[in-house]
Image 1 (cartoon, rainbow, N blue to C red):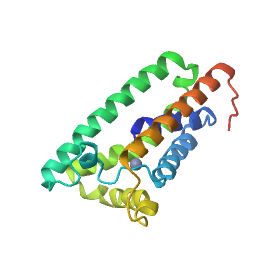
Image 2: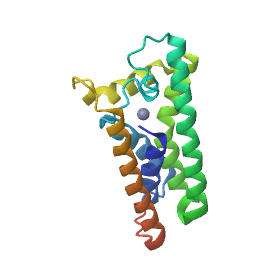
Image 3: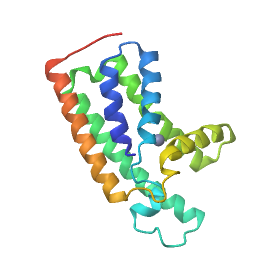
Length: 174
Ligand SMILES: [Zn+2]
């Protein structure tokens, strides 16, 4: 799933939790719940560049994934800038830590893929297991295009909710 969608959902959850520790845990939990939903990104790097049917070496696979990752994180940076410029709550501890929690799992996965650090393997495997809970049981993952459109719609809804909270601040603080 696009990292920006994770971040936007994390921000919403963060507006409702002021305790940074709870917000962080909620953000991580939310990341995994969102990843369970099929969103068309099995073999993402390859699919994104229309290379699914080509035989790629491990290095080429990693390179296509890295190219995808750079775009993904560029969009995230724009989203973060937008948030800090527009949302009064963007500096709240709860929001910041929930966003960190919702982004971190994919950062650790990327770190493992790039470095193959042994201490990260269990986390990579766990993330993969969660990610494939549903799509692993499907014959085919949903189409990447469908997945992207789905995520764009979800992102627009999340952005509307964030703007709503910003304008009407229905804050419940734990
Ligand atoms: Zn993930």
